[in-house]
Length: 509
Ligand SMILES: *[C@@H]1O[C@H](CO)[C@@H](O)[C@H](O)[C@H]1NC(C)=O
Ligand SMILES: *[C@@H]1O[C@H](CO)[C@@H](O)[C@H](O)[C@H]1NC(C)=O
Ligand SMILES: *[C@@H]1O[C@H](CO)[C@@H](O)[C@H](O)[C@H]1NC(C)=O
Image 1 (cartoon, helix red, strand yellow):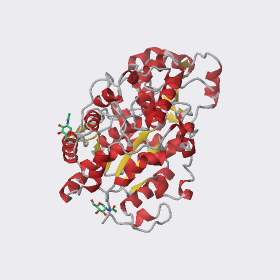
Image 2 (image 1 turned 120 degrees about the vertical axis):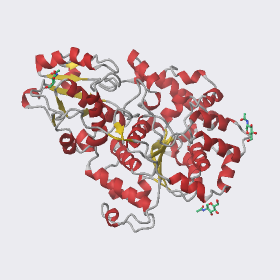
Image 3 (image 1 turned 180 degrees about the vertical axis):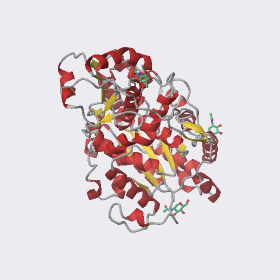
Image 4 (image 1 turned 90 degrees about the vertical axis):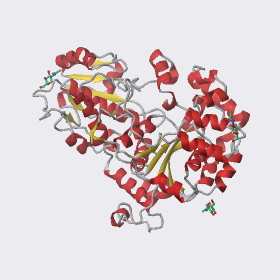
């Protein structure tokens, strides 16, 4: 296999850096296999609820109607609107292309999404023609879907046609420029040394000469290789335009997503064939729903070094995993569970996110869509959440096997459906920071949609107080989340434009 992707668990300076920068979404080779079925849970005793008293109160508490209706009110206009068109009119294509830019993208769906946006920007900086990016097969997610399998490629090219030229594949004279070609030897047309967050001038100095000499430059690795700061406003706007307008999923993903959304909004309505039921419904009587993105897999649980209540066996299993994957280079393991919780460094368990939602006023009539890959501990761990929210659904419960056939076993397409449903929900809440969380926080900010960001440090502290009573818990939670429901936060230097689209992608309304 070509060594283009990062190997975080194999060491190396860059990998080490990335472990520190992006700890929670690092893949590992073993995680999808180790806990595939309940029978493999020898390491693990089904965890009992850890916050039993709170849970009991949550189940008994009656939500007032006032709380409920406040919760579902859409965000007010915040004075900003989407704004991605070029400031130059006409936004001219360069007269002559400098050559072809090819990129090979690592990571899961959302990391690749950022890579695609950056690739368009780099091609624009260089006045080059972009070849539709190649998506590497991720060792964890194991999905070989191509760009065209996931995204609507014609829409992509068409949306950007006034900005850059894009080709689906290289012309015949460059057919030799493949990943296999770059995997077998050092090649002069491969740019291997792009620094993390490189500047526009780095590309002009280092990649333009290659383009001019050979007519092509292949950049790999490419993830996180373009700076977020000190770029011309039109380049920033172009990145936004790619992310928020040019990248739409293929029609069958959108159709399945629409069907799921419709079934969430009209739960009692009969389920027509895929793609027919939602079209015929009027919006009258549409129910509201929230999406809960839960990433609580073994990788993340182990990396956090927190205690999740599975007892000694679970603790040992996670420590062993940590050693095997990161050879002890996990910063968090220097701290006690209590210290980590106080700092808000522990991912919320399904039980804890359930208590958070209950305290915020969601109740057993709330329709919740669970966007999730695999939960460490499986259904046993989710059951507490389900007790609080019996109307919890997911792809599997809402769509038939036939409807899911096209996405089955394809991690990127499954994630794409969850992304689509998340974008169409009234409220989105993510229990774990990471690429999916960041992508959706950014996209929903851009469209001014309600998004609850859990206050991890506050929750960590509240859950440490074993004698806390429900009313105190609830009050602290409500106060601690007043300003975490989608209020626009302006991007600070070094922060991602894709997570914080204001001000770069937004203008005064
Ligand atoms: C929802 O909770 C209320 C009490 O808060 C209870 O009376 C009702 O039976 C519950 N409904 C369901 C479907 O569990
Ligand atoms: C790209 O094209 C623009 C406009 O045609 C020109 O001003 C700029 O110098 C070109 N840059 C490169 C790197 O070719
Ligand atoms: C813990 O909770 C109790 C009861 O709600 C409260 O009186 C106490 O102040 C809390 N302790 C801390 C350290 O916050």
